[in-house]
Length: 216
Ligand code: DX5
Ligand code: ZN
Image (tube, rainbow, N blue to C red; front, side, top):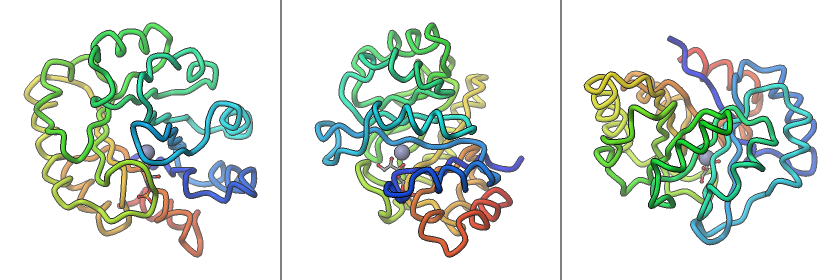
């Protein structure tokens, strides 16, 4: 199975965002990855809903919204209003994760949970059956263009085992430092969805890079 490619617009040119969204529309990317940061959970602030409503209007791809914010459940209506396909919350921000997952599903979106590099896969054991997707952070969240954390490949394998052992249907997504080299190893380990920011937008031909990642 070819991996789903989710280019992260965090690395796009915000001065010419419409052009980049048009390029993504033409490309083989199935999803667009949207990184919302609050300067509290992560040491950076990206963009919020006033900007994202224009992204949603201009793009025809499925939106994969990655919320690096505290209390993400407060924004379920706003994410829903974007027409998001996936609403992705961090395990580390949700003491009542089960409730948040149900709320996301009730709102008509696909619930996803992300784990940070220091969070083990095993914490997902009791929630994995309720998830559409699990995302493994392969860098510490907050910035694009960081170096891939090697242990993430092992975590993908572990997550694949957990999914198979529990009969869960969850997809495996990986975010951070993904390029052709790390991407190939992640797909081999069981990743279904690859997020790529820098690898796509810093490439001389971003569309060709998306094609190459899609054909790993
Ligand atoms: C990091 C974000 C990522 C980031 C990935 O906090 O969650 O989605 O944009 O960027 P690259 O692919 O450049 O590591
Ligand atoms: Zn992300």
